[in-house]
Length: 342
Image (cartoon, rainbow, N blue to C red; front, side):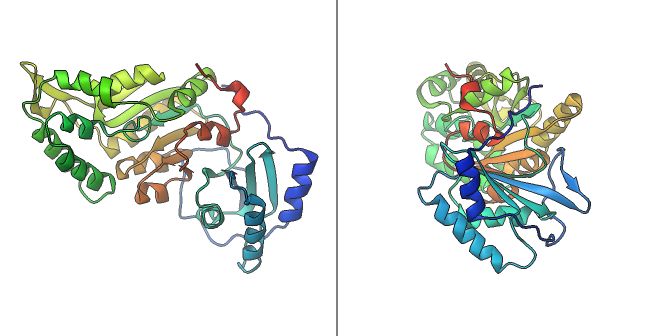
């Protein structure tokens, strides 16, 4: 598997970052309450090196760094040992803390760069051996069942259930079965129309998937949605395996039931662990947006919440709020010259 190219910074970038946040080492706050998946952590005795990488595309990013420094002066036991600008054109910043409180570093970054795409992790950031992703509102910009419901004149009713389920307010399985039952009698041809007229990839989805594949990463699409959509989306974007639910069809119409077992949050996590076990070693990347994705995001080395619901965003150690999934490649340290673009 191809590794990430070493980070770089110009002399100006290094001196500028050093002036903003000079080298300093402090003890950790407490044991982390945010466990991640397998990674090659850098262990310095009782402390780990915690890394936050962020795309600081704010025009006032230097001011924000200075404010971060001032705030840390008044935070007992926490100091930033280093700041590096690894891509001065964006810029992409990398912050490092010696400690064991991963969530604390994430909170510090979020307080000063709340709208920036970010990854907070332990150990050196590498190209993952496995990429596993949710589909609806992550790799595509829509919720398929909501769009399909529009062909039955039920979009408002079904989308309300979808939103509450993704927020974690409803049991996923019950909400799924209720929504599917409302589609009983819909012509199967509505699925193809929906795919053609309503469904489109999110920005950067294909570039992310194809670039990782070119670097030897295994790609898996796992969804609480339906194979009728997911199989085609996987073909569009380059996923090698698809796991999802199946709508039952009889005499050319939806029966209002599912065909086969339900793919839910536990399935997503199980697929991740199954694929990771086959991989043997190496980092695991996951992307998702809803409560149903939380176990998968937490089990991954790099769990990215994509324009996510609050619960999923809190559970993840990465976030993409900009809406462009190529930010994941940037945060992994893969230069644009190596992206696979049509």
